Length: 158
Image (cartoon, rainbow, N blue to C red; front, side, top):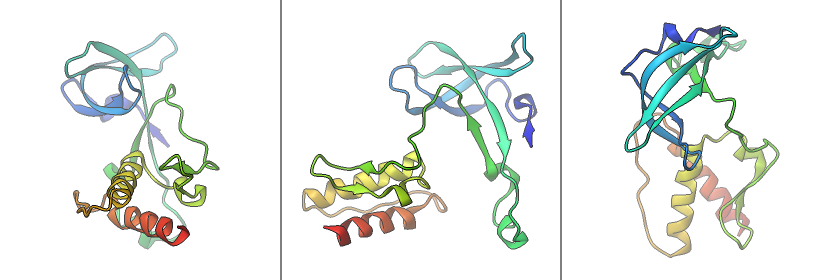
């Protein structure tokens, strides 16, 4: 079930949108939410230090699974993900390369990782490759465990 973005997004709200320069998700401010001639909603966003860009967005709620206990973990807000039709995601069957030496996160794990979690694994791997220690820290619930698991899986493969 998808909601109209105007139900959740409004002018002045902060969001993440693909950067016009790099394509990476960057923080942006919604300037307005409008509708095109086909009735599809889109947001005009402004990136810090950049010009405004039209972003077609669609918010979808994840459906609860068969186990009602699992759906109690998340609020509806946690289950929303912006959809960017012009953003190409890696295929689920592709391993994520960490180095030119062939070190990579297997596709069986990579397909479940979010971009920022891949960045965390790259961070851990980069410090390991330089024989330096590091501390991985962020807000609670963003997947530090899976990032460390990916790093340990990589070490077992070496």
